[in-house]
Length: 305
Image (cartoon, rainbow, N blue to C red; front, side, top):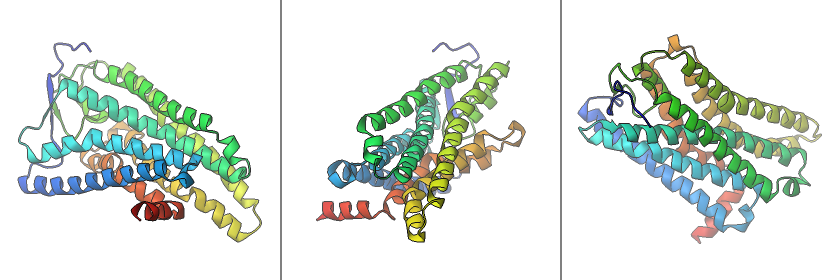
């Protein structure tokens, strides 16, 4: 990628604090979170692959979500850990481009994948007898592949446009990773065209999946209301409750940061929110989909024995 004379050769990641004691505390916290993320997501993927009872469309999507979260957390956390214990806070231009590209691609892919999972839950509740036929292996694989394809195509567009900007306002990124908003703050010159692309990508990668998820849940609610027994309604709702929690947490944090007016941005506050969906959320997903899931618990007991 070509770089202008005004573009920095490397960036400095400020991180969360410059206090050495707090940096060590944060190192311990992030190391613990990352360890739980790796163990939790890897265990869930292994369980789904090994136990034949989990070879269903729902667990196929959950397994792919765990794989994506494992990859997603790995894009950020190792660099955060190095920044906490090292005096060298720099990241090369190429390293920043790679981190930005994969973080955007995986974030967009997860948005699409959660929308595909909402459709899967709708089919499971509205057509329980034809669920396996309706959600065939070919369709599930196509939905997952399309999620990754759409995510990384859009990531290529925003990465190219972002790093074509002139970063002539310094090279210090007031964040713990190469994120969109801190990078834009370092850019100067005409950014009107860039803002247009940014709004388009926000609409296509976040707003559109959100609308699809809301539409799926409207149909799910309508289907549940037609069920006569209270027990049947509760059972139907429980099949999509874990997904609903994931969607609320993930989309809530992303929309909070990227859909607000530019005048209301606060990098210090946004660091905390972005930490949630980049580092904490990948750790929570295995818990959300396994703690209340009888099939996963039985598969885990069987594997341990």
